[in-house]
Every structure is written in C-alpha cells, then in structure tokens.
Amino acid sequence: MSSSIGLKLVSALLNEGDVKTFSKLEVNPVTLKDHEKEVYDFIKEFIYAHKAMPKSETVLLDMGLDSLPIAKEVSSYYAKQIRERFISDTIKKGYADVQPFLHKENMDVQAGIDCLTETLMTIHKATSKIDLVDFKDARKFIEQAYKRKKIQGMEGTVLMGYPTVDILSGGMQGGDLISIVGRPAMGKTWATLFMAHNAWYNQHKTVLFITLEMIVLAIEQRLASMHTKHSLTQLKKAQLATKSYKDLLSKLGVLSDFKESFWIAGGDIASTVEDIWKLVMQVNPDLVLVDGAYLLSNENKRLGKYEKVAENARALKQMIAMEFNIPVIASWQFNRTAEKKMSKDQKVGLEDIGYTDEIGQLSSVVLGLMQEESIETIMTREVEILKGRDGEIGTFNTKWDFYNMDFSELEKHPKHTKEPEIVVD
Image (cartoon, rainbow, N blue to C red):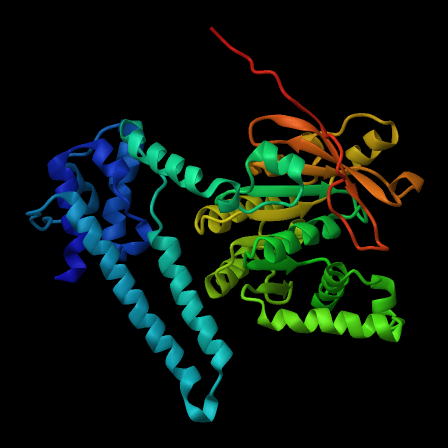
C-alpha cells in the first residue's frame, strides 16, 4: 500500500489539474521511490515545457503505464504521507546502520554518533519547509515579528560588540550571514574572536567557532589571552610572571561554572558545510563563526576553487543561517586588486572580495579590514562598513591594544553615511 502513495499523489495532481497546486506542494523528489519519481519528474518537465498540467492519458502513454491508482483525497494529503513515509524509512535504515557500532566486541561510540547524525541530516535536508509565503497573509507574520522585537529589543538579538554597526543593523538576526573581509594578517581572526567572545561572555549566547586557518590550541590561547587580559606572546612562550600565570589560571578556572558553552572546532572535524551542519545539530549554538571560510572544502570534488567558494557561501547562508535561524559570521579574503587599490589609496568595495561576488550579495553586513600594519595601527584600527543591512556605509575605529588585549570600539562619534535611495516613478 505504502509503495503506491507517490502514484496516488500523481493521480490527485492530475485530477486537480492545477499547476499552482503542483508548484506549492512541499514534495522533495528525494522522498519518492524510484518508480514514483520517474512519473513525478515527467509531470514537472511537462509543466516547464508547456506551462500546463498533462492529461492522465499522456502520462500513461509516455511512461508506459497501464493505469494509475485511484486518488480519493487531495494531493496535499498524499504529500504529507510521503513525507512521513520517508522519515519512517530513514529512521529504520539509520537504526540498522548504527547496530554494528554498538556490539561489545566492536564498539565505536563516535562512529555511532556520526551515523545517527547523518540520519538526522538526511531527514532535515529532505523535509525542510519551502520558504514561500503569500503576502495576503502578511498581517500575522508582521504582527508576530513586531511584538517579538518590541518585547526583546536589542537584547533579543545577537550583537557584534561594535556599537556603530550594531545600532545601524539592529544587531544580528537569524538567517544573517555577516562577512569580515581583509587581506592576510590584517586581523580577521582577532575581529571574529572579539565578536564571538562578546556574544558568549557579555550576552550569554552559546557559540560555535570553526577555525580553518589555525589549530584549536592557537585559538584557545588567543581567547584565553583576550578573556584574562594577559599577554599572548608571554602565554605562548610560557614566560608569564608567576603572579600573572596564577591570575590567568584563576580566571579560566571559574569558567567551568559558566552556563553557556563556547565550542571550538578545527578543520579536521569541520572541513565542509555539511560537517558544520552536524556540529550545529549537536551543540545547538546561538551563533556560528567560521574563520577562514574560503578554505572550506566541498563534497563535490569537481568544483573549481571559485565555484567551490561560491557554493560554500550559499550553503553557509542556506544550510546553517537560514535552516537553523541563527546568524553566521564568516571571514574571507580580499583579492589582489583590493591590495593594489589600497596601495594607491583607492576605494575598496564588495567587488574586491576574493573568489566570488556572491559573498557580498549573500551577506547582510560586510565589514572590511583595510589597514596594513603601521605606526597608525599599533593601538587602533579602522573598520569599514562595506555593506549595511539597509545600505549603510562608513567607518568606525576599534582599539587594537595587545597590551590590554582590548579590541572594542573606540568611544568617539562614528563616521557613517547612508547611500541615497533611488526613487523611480
């Protein structure tokens, strides 16, 4: 009986004869059996070619079928049954797949966890709802969002810790991709760590920090130095004074009682967006940061380096930020053209982000670190807002104080502008 659900869906769709109904149905072809998918795909291709639903006789003739099962219900009923069947079958398969890792003589707990996580990922990717709404129903969505923002205010969002951009953007929201861009050794890691630490320690948010440029220990050392206000150089060289060392250990020791977690993962376990997806499922963070996102690998090995970065940027936005409704901060590099522009004191823009234009297009906010190391950047650094949520551009200055490990925004009136609106009659 269950094997004919997909064909009953086809029958119901043909009976209804409505292209709009077909388009709105949340049926992922992955959830169909092979023989069901062939017929479903035929209808889809027919609609693309002719902008109309085919007749039942056409489907039977072209697909070589004698008949289709009778559909007594509407198509949405069968679509729901297909979804439930897929979930049930996938869970059963996952249960069977995990069994070999649970035998005492061949116990592998981590492999079992990975197997179950893969099962959940398969279900989630195949059954995620389509983000499609009718503006006729806008009132309830707008009212809910308005009331939620009214109650929560800025406290209900994740803040970057830079007041200028937080006020302009209204803080980070679920679904946001925030990009930090700079040439190598310009401080991208310090900027992302500052924002991560601010969200975790000051806002009590659970954070997942992915490092693709450094080993986990290097990130922990930087974070420990930032949190305790002790010299990173002396910490790495084991040259802290006894008093300073004891103070550092004391400040780090009390963190074991801190409610929220600050997870740090290296590229060995988070080399693809799919890996990050699995980690998000495990630790349920409020904020994800990917330091060196341009280094992410992709399961599609046929992609060139430019296509790979573009695909990964889309995946960070869609699979992580939007699916889990959390903000994602990712660091990227400027291309060599940007370096030439900087040397000539020319304006650098979104078009100068390396590898792909999609990073700028997908990002809600883009911050640029432009300044090379110089006498001017010993204690401060200028951050440029290349893109704001509503078109804001401008600059603000941050402390770049490695003596006090302070990277917060300088308390002075920021410079910012807003691009003029173009009104077309």
